[in-house]
Amino acid sequence: MLVERLVVGMLQTNCYIVADESTKEGIVIDPGGSPNDILKKIEEMKLKIIYVINTHGHFDHIMANKEVVKATGASLAIHPDDEPMLRKGGGLILLGLIASSPPPDVLLNEGDVITFGKSSLRVIHTPGHSPGSISLYSEADGILFCGDVLFNMGIGRSDFPGGNHKVLMESIRTKLLTLPDETIVYPGHGPPTSVGQEKLHNPFLH
Image 1 (cartoon, rainbow, N blue to C red):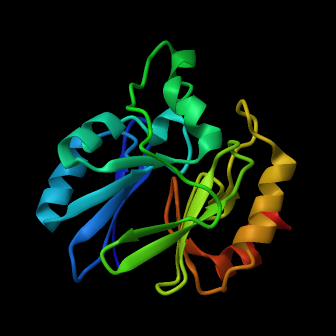
Image 2: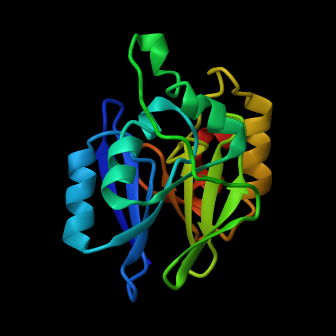
């Protein structure tokens, strides 16, 4: 599985282009802005994008949905609990701006499997940062994409509408920290880490 990280948009969001090496089918996770950069990288990698996936509905993870979906013909996917947020522009209206996203084609729930080429990711519902936050896990590759739930030496905010600190901590402890220690964690902001690293050193988990 190929993983390409692009830092995009006004809040320096990690957008991930993830591809199956043998078939060149891929997905885009959290196109939070800078659509031209995302599309250029897709072209460079010579990929056919099957899905655009939002780990949650906040504006800094959905800003380039429209452009990337239109250019690639990909299906847009999000958890049903964050679908209303997608329709409302991801909270950007609070800043006097609007993020226009197309409606989702696919609603992702716990246990669903996203397949692209010979690669796949399993959906883990990890609410707390938002009601419909999801993480995407490949057991075969030892890779986790967790949006804004867990960071390198940090955890997601829970003070936004729909956030809940207790629920967030339960998601992290019961659904993410139970994965193998060597699992590489790709968060929504900041550098990658691993499950083992965060268990040992993340100050918010002790």
